[in-house]
Image 1 (cartoon, rainbow, N blue to C red):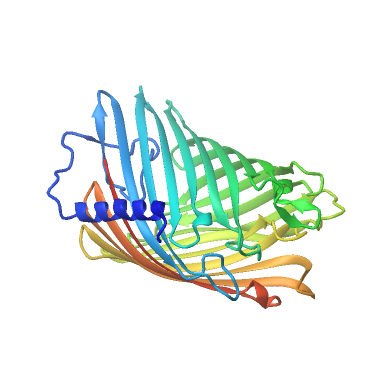
Image 2 (image 1 turned 90 degrees about the vertical axis):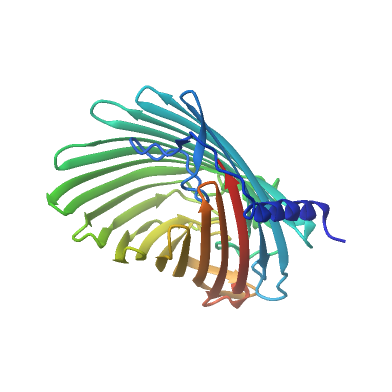
Length: 428
């Protein structure tokens, strides 16, 4: 007998699908939600052109997203894969308030997932986001606070454990100040990141639990841009920060990163943003976790090429250092590259095709099933999606995704996953 919550979610999904054929008129006399004059305010990736309901100077908006996924490997297992059909419902609502030349916006979304077979995996994720954009005479200030309470597959990024999902709380606060002059522009950002695991003593490695990986990061970032040529801007980005863990078992660290680069728009069809530099990260000592420092090359880049008005290619590449939750390793180096192709059939129908590769390299040896080696993973991803937006307040999207992880030394960490999805979103 099918799960009651799953059936209810399917009913909501069918309702949204049927609404496509209805003759409901979109709301009249409303105002756009996106505040183009300052920074983009709350905006839905599912309904980017939706309109809000204006009450005086206040703009209200809401959306209901629902869909169904077929997932061939819900735990990213290397063998004995377990498939399932997952229905989900995600209502959201928000408010935007003008304050003279500035704007305040707040939005909340709850995303509920219902598994047809593995009912114990049902969960609800929460997201709350607040934005305050302040326009002053000579510069602009943006304060962005985002809280997420999410459920992740333990094997989704780097951990090999299957059969469980981790619960996390994340809160990111960004405070940015920026200004633009004739040829010079700058942006200074302070970021506070809090990460909390809700596993209640869920074991991770040895005597260490997921709770021991609870952390707080404080980061300062400054970017200075100079328009050296009419269509080329030189830039220098500097980042410094600290990462502090609640547990003495995990080493704290401080880091400094320097990225010179350039931005260019040599033609109407070609845009580039390239940054390449170095990073030094110093870790405190630990008796349990690997605590060697990192010093090496990091960078990122993106190239956008508009072949025609309806066809766009995007190339991306990145090399970065990320905190690890795998065994007793403190970090890993991620090298990634991707290509995406977007085609616009008309104003309502678009398609996207993507291919991606990532290699995660770990700095020290670990042991899996009696084999000791230095772990290195290759992750391959490909996907295709088709999106139809008949109205600003209604959208449908269908897609497929194929993901493979190949661990060079530890085949028990390999997995293959295929997902087919369909979703509908209605809102104002």
